[in-house]
Amino acid sequence: MSGGLLIREIAANEFSRAWPIFRAVIAGGDTYSYPPDLDEDAARTMWTSPPSRCFFAERDGEVLGLYLLRPNQPGLGDHVANCGYMVSPDARGQGVASAMCEHSLAEARRAGFTAMQYNFVVSSNEGAVRLWQRHGFAIVGRVPGAFRHATRGPTDVFVMHRFL
Ligand SMILES: CC(C)(COP(=O)(O)OP(=O)(O)OC[C@H]1O[C@@H](n2cnc3c(N)ncnc32)[C@H](O)[C@@H]1OP(=O)(O)O)[C@@H](O)C(=O)NCCC(=O)NCCS
Image 1: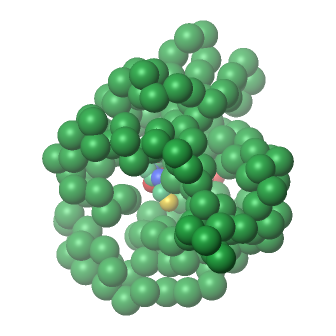
Image 2: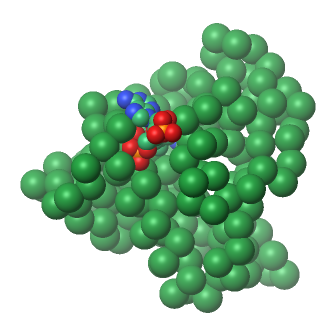
């Protein structure tokens, strides 16, 4: 159920409201390559400093998820967008990421991007892989052992892509 969900772009000074979600996600060491002890300032800078843009998904004033939208590369690669998504552990399985993905595709189109690429989808993150496939992304590459998973050790990473 994604009803009542408000998705909107945020200013950098709002990022702290999502920090508990961000911290919980990276502490797991199972989905993102960020150092599990990354601090809030570093996370805020990466997710809110231009050209990065950050969006919240909120219900009843509570932040349930956040996403990052940015060019995947500078210069001659900046027609391809890149995104990252995080949902509060308490709010999973309710379609929050699905709604944020659709929102990000629309925002990316509106900003003039012509494709979207995910560079680092951990292959053991099967729910995420299925979710992105449902939203039109294809696995276009597999990087052997590119992620040091906290419990599984070296784990393959998928590059996923779709045109907009
Ligand atoms: C991946 C993630 C963003 C999905 O968010 P979500 O809001 O639960 O996703 P949705 O409800 O829109 O989509 C449901 C899918 O998520 C998975 N899911 C459902 N309930 C879940 C739960 N309680 N916990 C984890 N994943 C769940 C399922 O695989 C489901 O797909 P399925 O219907 O094929 O089984 C979220 O689990 C998350 O933040 N994980 C940690 C960070 C991460 O992996 N980000 C993506 C990096 S590529």
